[in-house]
Structure formats: structure tokens, C-alpha cells
Image (cartoon, rainbow, N blue to C red):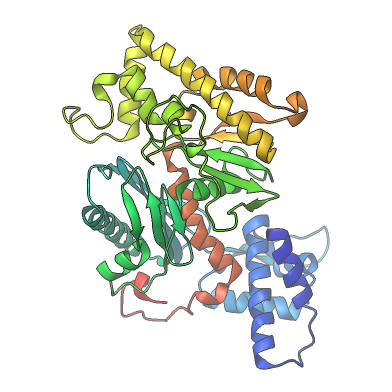
Length: 437
């Protein structure tokens, strides 16, 4: 996608200044994006270097830099010597001091928040236990709204204008309307999440969007993860539900209705357990976190009323690791079974999609040492193309933060695409920064 945008923007820079005002506005916006994205990918550069690399003339670059400075998106960081001769130019870099984004994730047993600024600097990274599976929609959205409000307050205290909020949900999402059509593990159907959150905080003029958690995690992995830049990859969420985010040819694959990636509901065992979606033998009943806990620590299984307070996934995994260290054979047996079924389902994905990498997220990454080798052997055995398919399992380094991380990056990407969405800085703001647009 970035390459296509760069081509369009470079072409736009060549349009003569004789078109309609609307044309000129479009050209200006495209050129602002071209410069901002250049600095985002290449780092600090002088005006002369920006002009040389983008094909824009120096006068245009100076004008664009001035506007981006006025919007609080770039700043001068000092002198930079471009070569052996000539005067050094002042380096321009992204300004992370005023513009930020917020990603939220609601899952079966937690709500996560991830806030960052335009440079990608992490400002908020937290997760709280919450029994979304055992709560109704209204209670879940109230809790989500409270977490969102606290995060916005923190970002405002840091002086940031939040340009977007994206919510990650484990289910089918109509991205255009921000509606969760079906989230089986949450028990949600046709929930207008974006609108409900906007209604709970009507004074916050910040766009709210909603997307599938695996899609957003895949974007995070493609952007900053262990397989960053790999044009064909699949991300697997290692949660109670198992979702898949698919990057194909460097783009997120959504499918005709936006529902691509529901890999956890691949039917792999007609004689298997009943899934939360109501069907039998889905892949997530074999490899989901609930399956691991059920096999390795049945007294702490999901859904048990006597299993104690709500636990974030790491607490459940710590209990399993404790039992593993104590020599509980059920843990080793469970992990071997999980690995085998990971290979079975992974082979289906490779036969269908031919990815180079399958990134294992969530708890899969936590137990990488016990899972990857056996899963890879099973995948290699079952893939039709054999070793020619060249697909490897790799463990994510983003832990359970991938979806919220990707969600925050959605708003950053919008700013890079259209810098004019960020208002000019006021000299003496009279209201909190996240309310100024």
C-alpha cells in the first residue's frame, strides 16, 4: 500500500498549478502526506534531502514543512551535513509531542489499552482483568468506556491530541459502521460498538473505529513485529478464540464481506468438542487457550464458577508453567496435542494461502519452545507442496499486546495519509488537547 501511495503522490506533485481549487487541495494534501511518510520511514532529513528523494522542488518542500510544523507534525532537530561541501541543512523529523492515537482491545478475560505518539513511542501499555465472557453487552461497554476515558485523560496529561481510537474485538466486524456482527466468545450479536462508545462520551470529538482483533494484530506484526515487511503472512491469535489475520501481497486480506481470517472455525474434527460458535470440532476447540487450560489445569478451566477471580491470560499461563516445573505430565501431554493440531490447521492455511510465515501470538508465543518444532514437523508433513512451500512458524514478540498495538497504529496511518486531519496548533489553547481538532 505504501508503494502505491508514494507513486500517486509523486505523480500528483507534477500536476501544474492551473487546476481547480479542489484539485489543488488534493495535490497539497498528497504532497504533505508524501513528506510526512518519507520522514516516518527514513528518519530525520534536511529539506534538500527531502526534495531530492521525493522529486518535489525545494520551494514546495519548504512550504510543506512550514504547514506540517504549524500542525505540530514535524520539528527542526538541528543541523545535518548532507555531504563534504556546502552548508549543513537543518534536519526535520517527526514531532511526537502533540499527536497521538489510542488502541483498545476487549477480549474474553481482559481489556487492553495501548497509546502512542506519531513517532511510535509507547505512552500507555496496560491490561486489566475483566470477565467479558460472563458479562452482558451493556456492562462490557461501560467498562470499556471507563478504560477509554482513563487512557484519554492520561494522554491529555501528556499534552497529546488523540486523532483516533480503534477497538479490537474477537469476532466478525462491519468496519464501515463499527458494528460487531458476531463475537461468539463474548456472546455479542449486532452490537454498534463505535456508536455506543461515542454515546457514552459525547463531548469527545475523536473518531472511533472497530475491527477484528486478528486483523489488527496482523497489521502490527507487518509493521513492527518479528516478521515486519513480510508481504505474505498469517497471524494467529493465541487466545480463547483463535483468529487469523492475513497479509497477502503486503495488504490486509479482508475478503468480499470483510470476514476473512476466521480460521479458528475451520472444521478439523467432526467428532470433536462443541465450539462457542455452536458448531462442532472447530480448530479453536483444539488449540485455543481454553483447550490448553482444560487439558493442563482442569480445575482452573474457563467457565468454572469456582475458579476464583478473573485472571488475565498470563496468570493462567503462570499456573500452567508452575505445574510443568513440578513435573505434571498433563502439561506436556497438552502441549504436544496443541502442537499437533497447530500443524494440522497450519497446513490448511498454507495449502490455501501460501504464506511465508505463520506468526504465533498470545499464549502460542509464550510456549514457543514446546510448540514450534512439533507444529512445524506436522505442517511440513501435511502441506501438499512440501518443503517448496517454505512456510515457517515464528513466535510473536508482541505478546498479548499485538491487537491493541495494531489498533493504535490505524490512527497513526490515517494521519500519515492525510495530515490535514490534524488542525493547526493554537497559540493559547483554552481546552484539553484531546478535544481540539
